[in-house]
Image 1 (tube, one colour):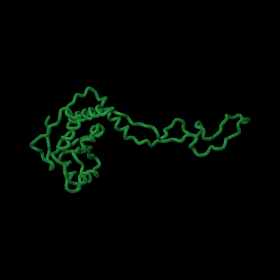
Image 2 (cartoon, rainbow, N blue to C red; image 1 turned 30 degrees about the horizontal axis):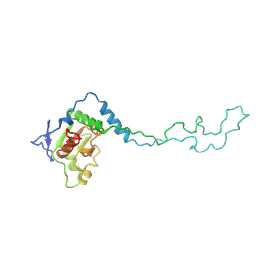
Image 3 (tube, helix red, strand yellow; image 1 turned 135 degrees about the vertical axis):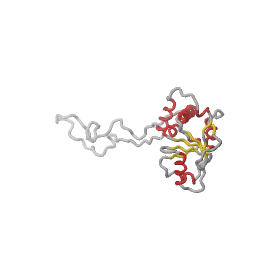
Image 4 (tube, rainbow, N blue to C red; image 1 turned 45 degrees about the horizontal axis):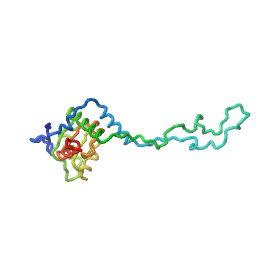
Amino acid sequence: MAIATYTKTGTKSTAPAKLDKAIFDVEIKNHDLVKSAYVAYMANGRENLAKTKTRGLVRGGGRKPWRQKGTGRARFGSIRNPIWKGGGIVFGPTGNENYSKNLNAKANKQAVRQALTMAQNSKKVSVIEDLTVKEAKTNEIVKLLDKLGLKRNILIVVDKKTDELVKSIRNISNVKLVTPNYVNVYDVMNADCIMFTAAALSGLTKRLGKEAK
């Protein structure tokens, strides 16, 4: 399956790249697997920050509010009782909850294939022969992306990250740089444009193609 390829200067190459059908043209009966991988990615990246105080952790309430008997009122031992205003919270988050979700490696790889297939069907995928920079210059990358017509949320997949390339891209808010081993459903589904270098496409084929284990 051929796809138009561009040179590192942004001009169209005469030799189109080939996309592996086992990655970019798989059968998608439904979106359940992609959804499961997407939700699992978000859950595994969730920070467990919510925490409430029980009645034993709330400050104050050490003295009994009134005597046990003879007042006509209900018996209470502390003003930090959960049913009182300012009291402790019952069954609230403790900060020890585990929100992670597991998806086996085989299912996760198939989910990535399906996501890439949907991206290719939506004409989001493009290939560039090379993307190496000698100096860290953000302006050069911005000009190249504009020349290629890539806008909004862009996912760039390179075979190997270099310090110069990382520094050139990290200040561009709508661009994310990854290597083939880190291509995931979340990034693919959220990207409006996905650009592979030729070497990265080869690396992705080794990871997800027919010969991949």
